[in-house]
Length: 531
Image (cartoon, rainbow, N blue to C red):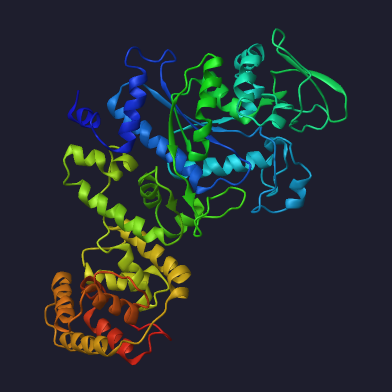
């Protein structure tokens, strides 16, 4: 066993902890199907959101971790429950009145309100696949519509009809009394209207694999459970799919956790072995509300990628999956800088530290090097004080600070400079609030101004930081962070900011002198300081 595998067997990184649980399933014998199956589920009743992406990413991280500790082949299926009936019209789609006419029809039978695909379900499936392909995931897409209609699910559906009473016993025990009166694990699809019907069944013939019910017009109908004539209610569908596919690992949000025993029992009745499940916490919007497909609240994947690279989103998803996280615009800069900090650390780490580093789980064995010689947060401040409208303006400052850097040799930095200009103009600029310094702050800034005018130490960021630090100490700021907070609020219009010595080195001595002069004169709120 290699050093890498040995280290992985004791690593406390959560993907390795999950991978070891999966490996334990097969400590006596390898899987009869010849591979370990990872699955993620998606309900295309609304546009895919960032949480859906996170589920596939995290499963991919566990899959990669498993492939480090085992030679058993793996597969990843992304399953779309697109045979589900449209229960309500989402808030974030066009032509809602058109969708309202198709409530309870299978999502793949509902017209596409965007007018681009065969159905609403097909549209949302295409969006999901585009998102996943953007990130280079290796996965197999499975559609419930095809799964039910193609015959792949027939054996399990027939077994469900045969063992109907046992399955119903599990489900009825979880339902309120009034719901028990009409509940069935099978939902017939009306041959007349095409709607998914929530109706009581008059008979289930386990030997023939048929159900009998009254259609919407009162006509008694008998249908086989195969051929796409029915779909299972969502809880039985979960467990039945586990049994039919032989799923070994599936993640889902904490709202599913109370149902895990039900899913597992259904799976066992249908001859399967329940998978290892990974329950993660939910993403929250700016107000702390759960992100919803139908509401469209929270950030979308496309919105994140408008302001930062894909790797920063992957980094955000890796962090503490069992902790609820607020997912809003202001988390992006922090994620970008922390991701690059981890990249820089990776190069000098031993194998144990590397396996605990998020970038290993983002990139696998091919971890790139970081060329971000300027942090993203500092690029934002540079865009602010320079009034940059494009990244070419930013590069005028970057080249002076790091002469060896160029867009060709530092592509990530070049990309980040463009993102910083866009992010600043869309989010930072509208919320900037400058203030005047008080007497103590004014005296300290005038001292800093004098020292910068006399400065002959070049653009060494650490020396400049020490000088700024010394000014704060000399003027009695306690704690010293109040000095830096004053600089940020007076000069940058924000309560937080970069290491100020590094900022001076990047922006330039003369430019920083002009900035402080403008701050003392109270003119920063009206226009940026020209370079």
